[in-house]
Length: 179
Image (cartoon, rainbow, N blue to C red):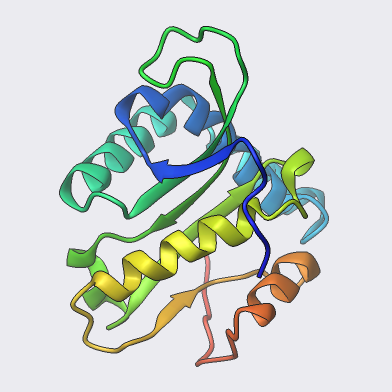
């Protein structure tokens, strides 16, 4: 696939990444609704991004990263500014979140929960570097099935093309209903 762009590092999530990670998560959530289901879908995803959701989500992220280091990776780029964190001088430009090994029994396989790259870094190789980190991590898990699964919106042509490049194919069908 592509080379990681110069100046971009893929590394495990650290607690000091939380604020920047949340901004990427917001981009992921709002990007899901954008152009893949109309304003109603975008409104629903936007409405869930409350302060309470942020706190609960980041707490879960930190637990997952602590319990299974490497299940969440971030792509950072040297920004040169002092951000006051352990990762001072870097900016997060993407992340990938594979469910921790103890959750592989949900699907009897490794699960890619989320992969997101900031729009200005799409097409640069960042997504490829994140995917490689996820594949490496998934291969290290003790899986009931040697398979990596994910859910991708059928209207998200760019994501579908990316996953097609990596050999993902239709496996079952995900259905849902309102509660």
